[in-house]
Image 1 (cartoon, rainbow, N blue to C red):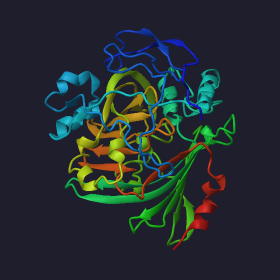
Image 2 (image 1 turned 135 degrees about the horizontal axis):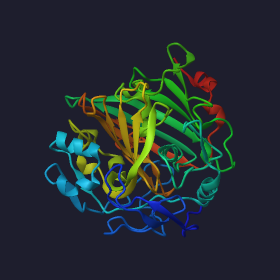
Image 3 (image 1 turned 90 degrees about the vertical axis):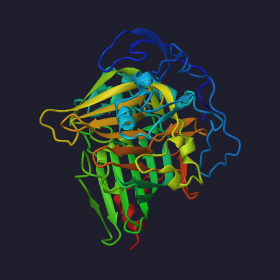
Image 4 (image 1 turned 45 degrees about the vertical axis):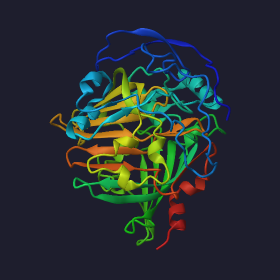
Amino acid sequence: MTMMQNFTRNSIAALVCGSLSLGAVSSLQAQELTPWGAVKGANADGSIPAYPDKGVPIPEGHKDGRGQYLDPFADEKPLYSVTAENMGQYAEHISEGVKGLLKRFPTYRMDIYPTHRTQRYSDWELEQVKLNTTRSKLVNDGEGVENSYGPVPFPEPKDGYELMWNHFNRPEATTIQFRMPSYLVDASGRRTLLADLELQSNKLTQDQTRDSLDGDYKQKVRAKYLGPPAQSGRQVLWYYSQDYQKADQVFYIYTPGQRRVRIAPDFGYDTPASSYGGAIFYDEVSLFEGRPDRFDFKIAGKKEVFVPYNNNRMNQVGLDPDELFGKDHVNPDYWRWEKHRVWVLEATLKEGARHVYSKRRFYIDEDTWAMLMVETYDHAGELYRVGMINPVFMYDKQASWTNSFVMYDLVKNNYVMANWLGGSKRNYLRPSDKLLNPNQFVPDALRASGIR
């Protein structure tokens, strides 16, 4: 697919720019926007560059079809590091969750690298975004969106629900197939394999052979467990809706010992996710996914924040898990942090609704529209969990993959690394612009492929 070389639309809008306190707007500036709603220009000091006209070259040594992604910025060195000792100097660019990690763990730090705005949009995606500016509409109290197709239903979001749906419908490959492990590191530092998964995903809103969604679901995902032994052969199938009042999310489970498929209606909200050892909730996959009806969502500003970005270094074949997974946190030597403009989205538990969290705060990138970080709070207002995406830049698609993540639990003192591409050469990540056979994403397909 031909990538955009020039911007096709100029937009002047009032945006909250620079480093602003949450919930407050110190100044409004008219900015020229990209077609998908990001500020086109550089920030005041140039630490965030203007959006580039050209994409990132494919690194020498890349092998098509292997499903591995080299680090296109392997020669770069950190500009500086942020630690507990000097974080006051950079406080306006640090999320409250990361401040909590810096205060909790003396060995935690952020290495700040040069910022690269790597996300590109294909001509097809740009056309859909342009159409979405006038056709997309929130429905059912923000639980759904209609008349939207492709990525970014609301390039210039006016409220928190529009911002949230931009994350739900962020630009992604039409299909993703991968094999990756997930690990839990407990309070003693002991590492446990939670899952060795083969996963397939159809992002139905990205089907380029159509111009509207066929059915109620925006995404269908199927996964098979290859390990650990207790999970081997187990399969799951789940659907995410484009309107949760019209069609709720659905989970199917195939268990080899029983040789049957059952539906699991309670797999949502703050139910502990068995796929991740119960260390995260079902609505914490990719930091947030699923029915949003228990929270009120509000835009709390736009800031320049240090976020994980272009994190290919952590996802290389041959990286020893013993080197990566520390007792309290992932080894900071392998994290790449960059300064980017992010929307801040706050979710507050509705009166009378039930959830373990009273508040969640998300940081959503202006170019990818992905939630890159989250911090959650218990009902006493104390910081509970801190999560961050482990983004892989797929330079053959000129796009970021944002479904690997780390979640730190500050109550249980453990953390989860979900869907890690690095380590074993058997792991892979393969995007495509063509849908996989839809017959693979039905309950009967689980049973037909099952083994004892």
